[in-house]
Image (cartoon, rainbow, N blue to C red; front, side, top):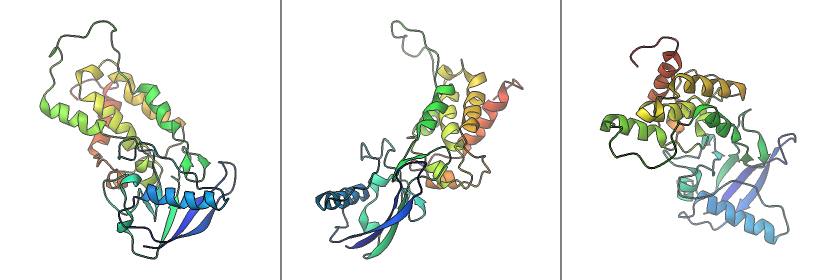
Length: 249
């Protein structure tokens, strides 16, 4: 298979960027998207040219580092995958493929296709934790959790922090990310200690960092590689309002 790649090149957040065109031939359909970029970079390095900077780590759909905007979609033309799980057979032979970094004020470009996603870390530092007492391990079953609540918590905790929700949102909102982190703890007894401040602190930090507002159009859920539901945003809203009006959650 042969491809024409239109790849965004940008030296840093302060520089202007542009699309640069590359031609790549004889790529098998079983080649992953990140492997295809590896092949391109090997060719560029051998030719004495600068390689394309892109982020990656586990290449197993776990870390979320390989986040790219491909032909107008976060992680490319497939559902419930990260970029490293996208294979070239999803494209037509001789296709033109546009590859860009995440577009968000809160995710400044580091270089080319790599963006700085430390804003997510700052949101977690604002409230995405629980208080624990150090010492010996507690006895089992001291905090019984129903299967329903455990499943809801695990569903929310499956977020890998890739930022596809932000990239997909027309407002650049991080509400699905924040909601998944809040909801994962809200369904567990261990999360109750900070419950009154967690949602407010994390939403305040999200706003401070320049993420947009949520208008609930569902694009974040549609493009999330883990299929996290916007129902968790409703849980976030309940947690946000709880301390102002204590009562049943």
